[in-house]
Image (cartoon, rainbow, N blue to C red):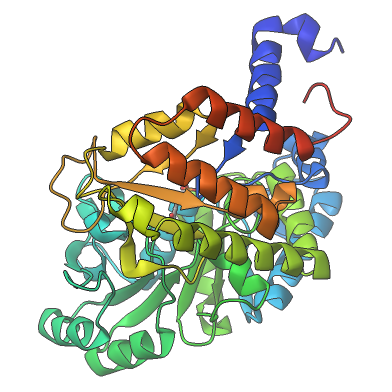
Length: 418
Ligand code: PLP
């Protein structure tokens, strides 16, 4: 019964150091967030001890009466949050939700068509080393070279030629709303099923600040840990007709015992996502991204070859285009790291630099909005990023400005360890 610090001081030090890093720096990786204390409590709990293969009321193990309550709460809350008829809350991750969704919809050898990885799609949408690229035939659509946006007429023409069995809407790096009605009509016209992966923008949908894909799509998957700010995990939503196939595709199709501690934490996260406070936070997420996009399109930065893909954003992230800059994605990521801002480099469409270097940055605002940042703080963050991306930045002075912002918004106050 000894505490972690006594049993395993090395791992205790990792937790302490990581908490310190999260506190002292500005987290702007678009796919990350800070799970609230309540979510961490549910996840770090005795529910991790429980086997519960099966579904509530139909388990292959005894003693599931309490975890059944947690799973039923998670299901009913996420259905209500998104207006879905059916939900499966067992996927361990976004990738596993996607594997289960595809396995329920089609069989190996069938064709999928999603946004290409090089233009902002996800690995699970058909990348050749991923299960999706190995099991299924893959066609990919891309953004337009001049606008960097999807042209739905071109997607339609391509889908008519390719005849995919599943058309995929969703992205990991695309700064604009998708037209779900257009995707639906293309799917209908070509005889495809429509799967939307809303992993990135689910929190915005939950808050009513982004079009919802739920009505238009046959199946919707999501992660729970990005804009939704829950535990690292996945979820599947669908029309009731899909219930049987999807349930069996997740268990026993893809997984064994569900992670009941994570499912309990999902239930808590879905409860929070239905609150007025959560909506207000998502408004700050969007406002922050708009402020950063606007600052990085200013003449003083564009004259150094820095620009913003599509000229702005509708969502929680900004894609910085460095194709005309002397800085590449790796150098820009390292530079921002040295001033205390964590982002990830990201290939831009038609990127001339190799994938490990890239010509872009993906900058997201969800984690800082969770921390409490509003317009004034995001304006200061935008100034710091703009200064860092111009020639000869004063790294020490910028690091001091980052430290001041971080100190003003304590993360997990009152907790010295986790
Ligand atoms: N789908 C999209 C669109 C994503 O961006 C991601 C993660 O980046 C995933 C799925 C995969 O989620 P996970 O990392 O939980 O497997």
